[in-house]
Image (tube, rainbow, N blue to C red; front, side):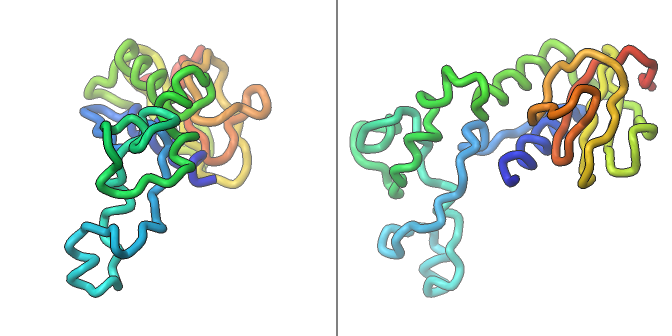
Length: 188
């Protein structure tokens, strides 16, 4: 559910006007490492708080580029913060040829955003339901995010990208964002 929601909010944010900033590991769907041994922690807040505040180390563990190696391809030696063995499954190498991976999702969304544009203008779409945040973008496409507990009907159109699989045709599942080139007029 966490990854599903993260992908939905990422697609929502990418549909908004302006620049988009991605953080280390986000494009890999990389979870925070929470079980770093105390003697390997480096964040000063951990030491100043005598271990009561873990700090940022869990989100600063070096990225896994490859499935193997002392630092999963991050460098020739071991990483300055320990990388767990499960990092291999999240590595860029493991995800590169997987069309369903989080890395493939980010690459596709960014490529579509580049082609479709994310200019300044947007128009609110309010006829998709009270649990749906939707807005139209220049070029005739709409971003819709279902925050509710049940699927909602989508307008007819061509799906550009969806953050999760569409379980039923014409329905937007919960915790999902879709970019759709609508055949009806939702443009502002």
